Length: 167
Image (cartoon, rainbow, N blue to C red):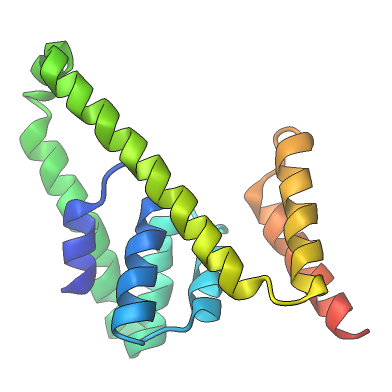
């Protein structure tokens, strides 16, 4: 039921989902730790629709195969229904200055949520020099090496993390 609710209210990038997952599953319910949430997001980077696929991984962690199936159905079903219902009226909404302004404001709010969650999760996980090194290198690769796949960044971070733990 949790993922059905999230799937119904999720707007914008799938990364907005991270805020909801952190607030509900980590802070409120205590079903995951912040570290487990970040692991789930990293695992999701290997799949199409990376953050939404994270729901499948989290569902599996919480309740095995049935949890994974329920989480996947819950997170994706509302999107399919909304597209089916809203497709005929979206062109009319796009022509409305009021609706356009509202959607722009919602997009800005979504970006704000993503920034806030990034800082909060960063504060909780950047606890030693190894984590800082991996984070800084990941940021540099992301912004200065064009068209680097998130998969390579996740794999590189995992390898570097493993090697640094051996020190």
